[in-house]
Amino acid sequence: MVETAESPQQETHARDGAGLHLHMRTLHPPVPIPYLTREEVTSTARAATARLPGTPVAKDLVFYGGLGALAVAGALEWPVALAVGGATWLLRSGRKEKPDVGAQA
Image 1 (tube, helix red, strand yellow):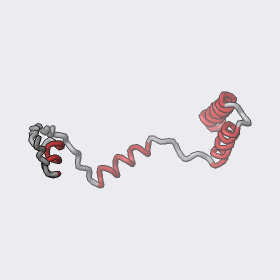
Image 2 (image 1 turned 30 degrees about the vertical axis):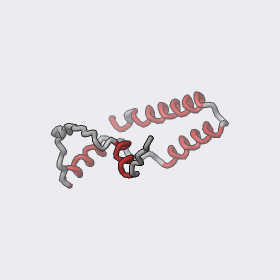
Image 3 (image 1 turned 180 degrees about the vertical axis):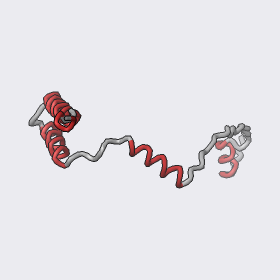
Image 4 (image 1 turned 60 degrees about the vertical axis):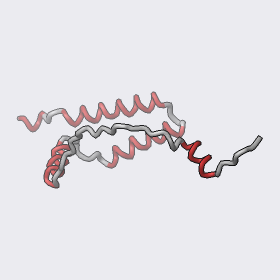
């Protein structure tokens, strides 16, 4: 019985599938890529920021931030913090939107 020793290079080709040829079709669908100019981006940003409300008062930020910090720390439960924050927001926004009766006279 005579054993033939294959070279290491032949063994590698046999294992790696050197005789296997797989043909694949690559599809490249047309994808439109918009070209944006600086003027378009600027006008879109201005239109988007015009719809946003004004900057909040620092006092409001401190109040709601403190309320959130108390809820995170566990001093307040989340439903209580949401109820207090929501009620405060409703009361403050209702007070701001009421027309001044003295200004109409």
